[in-house]
Length: 276
Image (cartoon, rainbow, N blue to C red; front, side, top):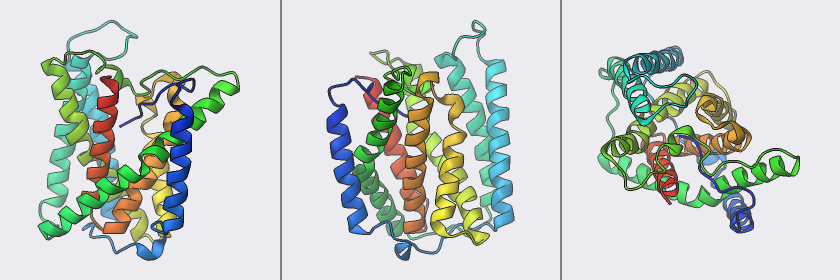
């Protein structure tokens, strides 16, 4: 999921930057980022199987979106997708991707102690809370540089999906869209990026932080089509930072529960911001 941030001229800009920098310094001093704290991944697939799953999920996501576009109610050419169109694209892609995940993972030993999963999820929530202001400070800083160099101010919502949720009171379609954004998208994307992709990169022997950075870069780049034109640079920076945080969560716990929880809370918070 993309970003939601105030334009650089917002009165909250300096507050976000100052709090974000202080939080980032505290995180760095705490040493929680050190690779010595990472654990072995419990991802059940080999490197080759993981890369194959990642490619398949990407292809099925694109295929599902195309199917959804074709079966959705027609709309004016060149206009951004409506809520109807977005729901059809998201739903079709999710159905195909979930089927693929079941086929790949249903016979694998992915059992974990529920208490372990719960602790991992709590760590993901805490990590997102600690990194919230640094993440937004990064986006705000890049947006400010963009304006200072003569570029356009970013829109209030930098992600196309968030722009569809600005209308209140919410109707049934918007609630379905929120459910997809907060529950389904984080789960599928975390299996895809922090499970399949990061798992493959770690299994081929890359240093953990190199694998995290590479998976975060791919995560950010593949979200470009969803970013609003004037918000691409700040959005990419924030998404790379978010992908790095989610990769850290996965490496720190060896579980996908932590990044799924952090991703879901990030999306939920951005949805709430879009409804202001």
